[in-house]
Image (cartoon, rainbow, N blue to C red; front, top):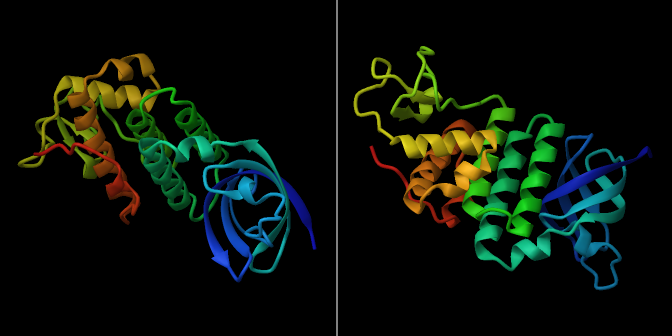
Length: 245
């Protein structure tokens, strides 16, 4: 059997038999991989804790016909324990790994891997609020996947902004002429925050009020659900203040 080695972040796990687990990972070079970790649920397992969700590890695998087999795992980022003790960070991390699982369905991406690892590291260190970290991750992940939103020029005709109508189905803000009847309006502060989250302007993001963060977060949630086409099961567990039209 061919043997290969890669860095991986654990997205989810499933029990298999009495002592094994199926581990779904996003790897640095091989995309998304599903592999069996044999005996990992036994108390005597040498690398069981290294293969929990949100953990980053250097793994060695045997290439199998349907599922690969993990033979070694060395910890690179022990983020799981630090994230699990904080409810807001834990729910945000679950949305992140579920999103990564969906956007890498057909093929992997080094950019997606690096983005997810960076976001989980930031959550574990509490560098920013969990909601801001999550919303920034979602916008960037969707952009890498080909669904980059626009929060300046009109998403439909390209007319220079700023604009106050926002329509997630059209890709972001739209001008008055392109806005469908009843299109919701968003104030300048919320649109500015969305642009800051997409661009990584943390100084602007941290300065936003709770009300502004809630409005922007509602847009991010709606935009994510629309483009992924399937609901994220973990998203309702994250506290969000939705915008209304």
